[in-house]
Length: 231
Image (cartoon, rainbow, N blue to C red; front, side):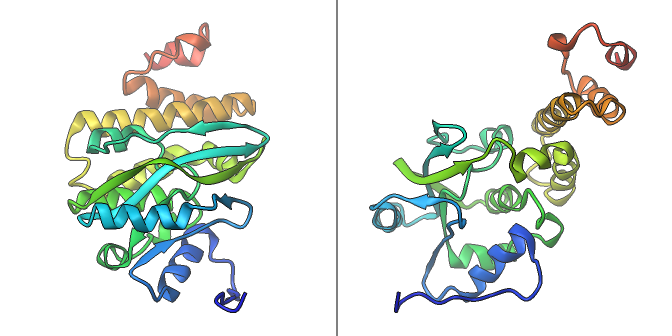
């Protein structure tokens, strides 16, 4: 297509670094990225531009996401994002969000220590921490290919480490102790389940103890001796 430019990265920048490179190359006021194995709807771009026009105070507009591939469903994002709601979600599924370029610059891009995984979520927390507004478009705008085994599922083993890093990176956002506890406990339980299903019981034990300390009962996994010790 004559209006498309192709750029190859000479080194593997992972998800976050590649996204940063795309932001750097953007010449318009807005940026909307699409992963190679995902799809847009015919009206996705027009819906995004209309969303920014209707909510000029928003630095991010987003919509719901249709999963396809090995799993099929509609992933519905919350209509109104408060700090507590953002902390209880897993960021934004797929890439179903568009951003104002000035917001990306003000945050400093996607953090390098999050490039492997968690960079989108960390970026959105950084935007919220600075008081920026988000606006939901009220419709599905993105089709996200969901694999039975994916990077997201593989990253679940270390999800808790990324969440701990986010807490350290965003002291204002996580100044509320209850929000921080819920955020970390969600990650601990997510990683525990992934490790347990993979039969990696040594690491599962470590993460489970952290989850129990945050208030998780682990009732569906009883009786489990290492959870008994953790309490």
